[in-house]
Amino acid sequence: VQLQASGGGSVQVGESLRLSCATSERPFSGNAVAWLRQAPGKERKFVAAVRWSTGTTYYADSVKGRFTISRDNAQNTVSLQMNSLEPEDTAVYYCAGKSYYTGAADYFYPPAYDYWGSGTLVTVSS
Image (cartoon, rainbow, N blue to C red):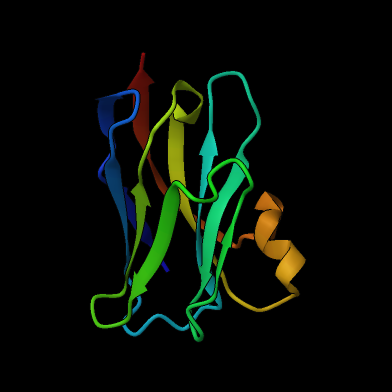
């Protein structure tokens, strides 16, 4: 399965961006798709995930209430709506897929994802 992320850009503090991740598999047969991010000089961190079959969503505490992840079954895409952006949100954002369910806790664990798409850069300036 290939994933392609798009939608990054440069914005000011408080503005919004919407990222999109397209999956090559139609229909998508994996367990979940997530967004993770990596800021310069830092490790890759979980941002949000959606379990494909149920639509259940999971969020990192740092983005709860500001970011919304959603999936479109018909288009086989996953979007990340990012509102009230902060400089700390500056990072390369990656979408990643998980083939099988191994417990909800694993959604928050970057190494648990089986395949990764390209990244898209988000820059938030104050």
